[in-house]
Image 1 (cartoon, helix red, strand yellow):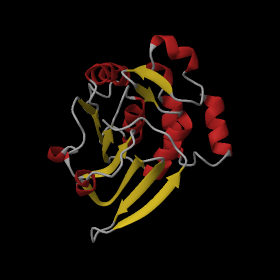
Image 2 (cartoon, rainbow, N blue to C red):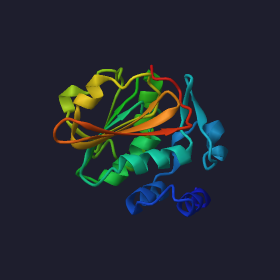
Image 3 (tube, one colour):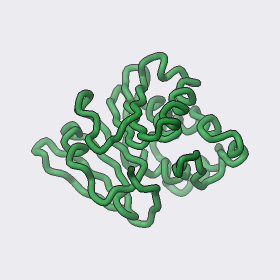
Image 4 (cartoon, rainbow, N blue to C red):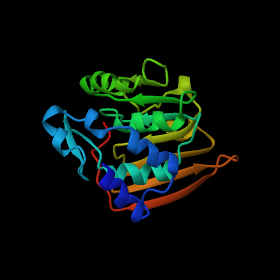
Length: 203
C-alpha cells in the first residue's frame, strides 16, 4: 500500500496528514476475501461477494479528502460493505468519535463487524454497524458531522441532508459523479460535483 500512498501524495490526491495516517495504519488486506488478498494493494476495486465491491483506494482517498473527517466527529458511513472505509474513518475520529456503518447485505454486515474489530473498534464502542436499509438514514443517532456513501444514487435522499449537522459535509456518488454538499447554518447547501466515477448502485 505504501507505493500507492506515495503516488497519491505526489499527485495531490492525498494531502491531509490524519487521512494519510489512517491509510498507513488500516490494512486493506484485512477487509477482502481470502482469494483477493494478493490484490489488496492494487489500485482497483475488488469483488467482496453479493454483487458488491471494496472501492478502489484512489477513489476512497479522493472521497475522504472531500469529506474532511476529523477527530471526535460523528460520521454516518452508508453502504459500509466489508468495513475498510469504516475502519479508516474510525482511526481518523479517534477514541471519542463515533462511526455508524449501514450495510443492507446480511453477510457483509456480519463479516465487516469481525474485520473492523481486528482493530478493537467495535469492542471499544467507536464503531457500530447496522444491518439495514440506509434510505432513511439513521435518525435516532443524528445529527452527523459527516455522511459518506459508497454506492451511487439517482437523487440524494432528503433524509441524508436533513440528518447532516450545520457545517457538515456529505459526500455521495450521484450517477457517474461524486457530489460534495456542505450544509451551512441557514440550511442552504454548497454544491460541488466531480464527474468520471463508477460505483455499484445503491440498494
